[in-house]
Image (cartoon, rainbow, N blue to C red; front, side, top):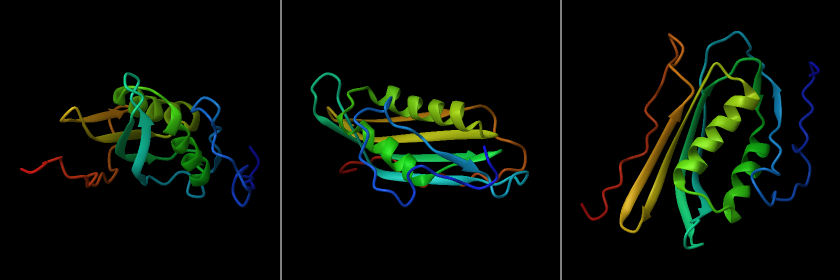
Length: 152
């Protein structure tokens, strides 16, 4: 990786990848390498397909990570998340798979993902994954997504 960021998608027209496997995530050098800080991405309109019915499922995803040498370029992340629109998978597979792929490729100090799924069959499903214990001294704000209350 060169010292000068050269993102593949930034400033370019880019088609939505047809599958999550075909989506290419782009990483650039961390401009604050050596500094402990948290990056948060919120995707309040994430969509995938139910693998049983083929109907759309909707979630509010919150991705938090403490970068090390690289950060994920946000346009490539947007395209990656959008590639799930026609992807049939259970909530658990989508949520954990996104977190693991980001962690495996970006190699941050720490990463967590919260998948707050809207009800299917009357039951909201929330899925959480993290790479391990957060680094000591890292400020971890609440993910800020209220639990589903229905008509409560």
